[in-house]
Length: 193
Image (cartoon, rainbow, N blue to C red; front, side, top):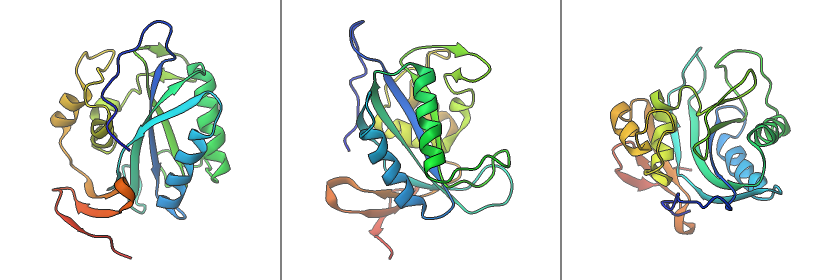
């Protein structure tokens, strides 16, 4: 999907939400693509753009590499209802919360909800580690580089440049009906089967 650069909304528009997707168990790419489709078919969620998929080195205990990406959606759900929806979709794909930062079939994180700042026991927005995670900032900058972090005031692109692409191994793109494989340095190669 194309970059989602128009982040302007009027008070009457439903807010935009940024969601991170990750998987490193089962069939990660199939699960991620299916999760995007499921989100797009969910009432109150209009998926506007999603990033390429990035193969990344995991944070936490020893485990397989992750595939990560992000999407932008216009939502007609409250932040808490959206969070519950994301958690239901994770469970649908077999997510079990057993180990902090452990391997998972699907991880959906609500990163941003318009410019809302929320701190409750169940939800913190913006995501508290958003500004320090290349595996989130690299894909999010691919689709929403001009979105400003509500607390830091800096754009996603600026934050992405600050953290670099440490831990990003490869990129897989679904654009134009053709899948390409690239290293983090953007050297294009045919997809490996």
